[in-house]
Amino acid sequence: GAVGAWWRSAVAYQIYPRSFCDSDGDGIGDLRGITSKLDHLQDLGVQVVWLSPVYASPQDDNGYDISDYRAIAPEYGTLADFDEMLAAMHARGMRLVMDLVVNHSSDEHVWFRQARSSRDNPFHDHYIWRDPKPDGAPPNNWEAAFNGSVWEWNEPTGEYYLHMFSRRQPDLNWENPALRQEVWALMRFWLDRGVDGFRMDVINMISKPWEADGRLPDAPVVRPGFLQPGFAMSCNGPRLMEFLREMRREVLDHYDTLTVGEAPMATVRQGREITDPRTGALDMLFQFEHMDLDSIPGDPRGKWALKPLHLPDLKRTMQRWQDALHGCGWNSLYLSNHDQPRPVSRFGCDEPAHRVGSARMLAIWLHAHQGTPYIYQGEEIGLPNTPFASIEDCRDIETLNMHRIAIGERGEDPAEVMAAIRAKGRDNARTPMPWSGTGPHAGFTRGTPWIDLHPHWREIHVERDRADPHGVFAMYRRLIALRRVHPVLAEGRCEGWALDHSRLAILSRSLGDELWLVACNFGGDTETFDLPEELALRAGTGWRWLAEPMALSHPAGAPDEHARLQGARLAPWEGRMLRLR
Ligand code: TEU
Image (cartoon, rainbow, N blue to C red; front, side):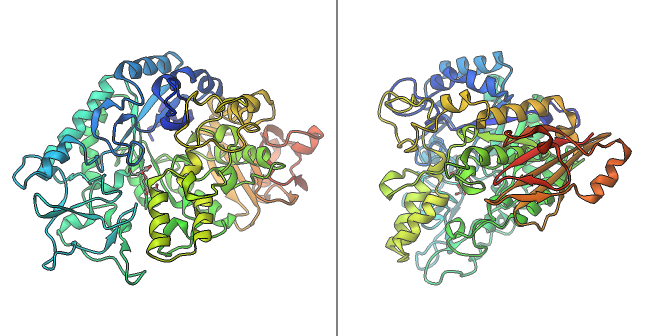
């Protein structure tokens, strides 16, 4: 990240438009609804909004299947509504980052409708085609992210097309320079309209590794008799950096943007290469390593194969990214987004006694790291996972397809499948924002919501949390303000201590003479901690045995107690951010 870049001290907020606020009563959130809630974001203090896709789309994957990159989906509004929303954000000093979904389009995009009509069509080469095997079978055994083969038969041309996600999301062919020109043009369209950057969907999948020699190996058989996970074999192809640098040269260098690439399977090495301004092309990445720690590695069920989170894994993973990018690249920091379960349920404790406290602790812990934090809508009030009783309560294509195939084809235990959906299903993050505790639908819509609200919306809602000086919102607001004022939080080195401890997370931040300590209890028992000896030495003569509390998840109690650095007692799920000097 370029030194001095404005976003190094900024915090971003992700809006999932379908579930944010509905202004017209159709049960689906929309742009005017967003505009009506910008005060909420301004009070929180975020300087960046990442807006999930609002483009024209058949909504097979809630807008991640785009049929016209230059139009707004009618259920979300019009281009005029968009301009109004953008102006209102800019007037509040907020920048808007749009979702750029160009690994694939919708099958209803005019490019694909043309492309599939004949092999000679000028758009044919915008997508990825293969002939069938001699027996008519698809080219290989890969299973798509949303199930079924990644290869879908196209009768008019007698070929298969590739789709890494749903069959209605055909992958675009980045090997074709004409396609790349189309992408640069649509990016300019939005930048010229005033948007401030892009979050780039699965950007490290645009170059397919196998395009180097055109061979399509089978994936190793981990589940005999079925399709095999092939995701890993389609990420990080040899031309990725070339394509990204072309994007930078052709588009990004001509605007003042914030760019964040979503990069499943990214390693720290790739993270550094892509985000180091000397070698790279993007400001930051969304890496997934800390999102993969609560599933059984190598299990063919992927993320649905549940495994309890081991805190040292989480701390070490975060620290690896902190160490690798400090001073050369830049991290994004996130605990949730529209694809992930709710962090208070996943990493904290969503029982009534601990929900608010643990959500505040998690906020302290995440914001203690170096990087740009992303808050996902609802996280700022500690919204928990939803206890989906049956598949009828779910809407997400990934969840619905997995459920059907796991039970119908693979014969898995239905109760276990539902338990996995409750823990990991994407709909956890997609229940509508509960704005108030009064009916009919918490102020989200006056119509019928497209998916039910969290059943506890009468107790857990924005109005109530915001009114509580010790609520979750208050903690996020404080952390955002601290980052803007104290350079140590934006620029200071982040170090992890006692990495083997299975319940405590201890971090330090240092910059010049400043030294801060963060101690968090990720468990339901009281824990004791001491200032790590090396930090005590480093703090030297200038340090005080009583630190200055900067952010406290559990503020009740004697002030001196919070400031202790030796034999300090942390209540269950308590977190403290302290300034030593
Ligand atoms: O997600 C990319 C991705 O890697 C997904 O497989 C993600 O890991 C999965 O949702 C986790 O269960 C992006 C978008 O964020 C997601 O909403 C889209 O469905 C997907 O791309 C396709 O565009």
